[in-house]
Length: 315
Image (tube, rainbow, N blue to C red; front, side, top):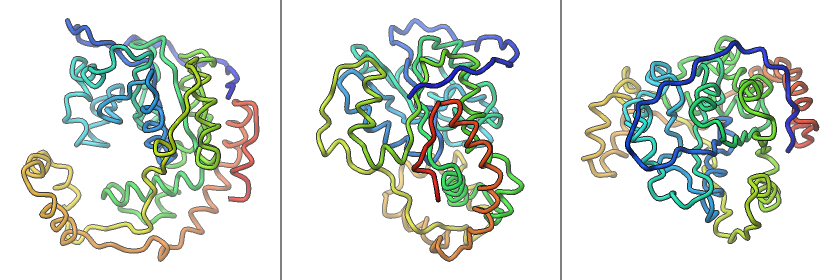
């Protein structure tokens, strides 16, 4: 899908400083940048099946997210060496030396301005990269984002209040805003947009266009390689006791979890949380607010990519 270049208004940003390493491993040159809750995990898995693409051992290492921002948003990942150590980051592709593309899929890469200057850091370190941006109907995506953060105990507010007061959900669904951040640093020919609904409904054809854009030879996916991935469950959970979320993100729990049997981890999860059906929650106010707020941003995004997206009509 062609992306139309937009005027660059960003101030010049100094290249990211990366520690020198004697490693012979090659850096990534393919980034799935999100959007969160739009199918990046599925696209990661589909592309990993191609023999000329090596996807990272850690799906979303978030290396190019500011470390302080990452520590606040996802402390578990911030403690992992691949999120901040260049040599450890390159190790994610230690088996990909012969691959034409080495890719990763960190959805935090398209959450500007809440994850700042990510595109600039990628451009400074991996300037020849290709960027794939998978997007979903923006209201539904924002609602899914809310439920993900709620389940992870990062969002204490009810859904409508959260949509009105936390700009993270609106900004992440403002695809024009996110795309412009990359157009400020990459030529439009290096950016490819995938629509999640089209990937779901016309999987083989959508992937074929993506593979063609990567200048790779045609590839016949086996049906088993095109299975559904990570369908969101109809239930969510809330904390049964105070501080459950803080304990979940702690280094102590991360260490203990590695040593505990899976059955015990699951039992602890059940006794510390309360599950409920998301259909019990009235989302109508949140959806109406988002639909009004995001309508002009959808139009701006469609103008940038040069086409309307009918799959988003009437949602």
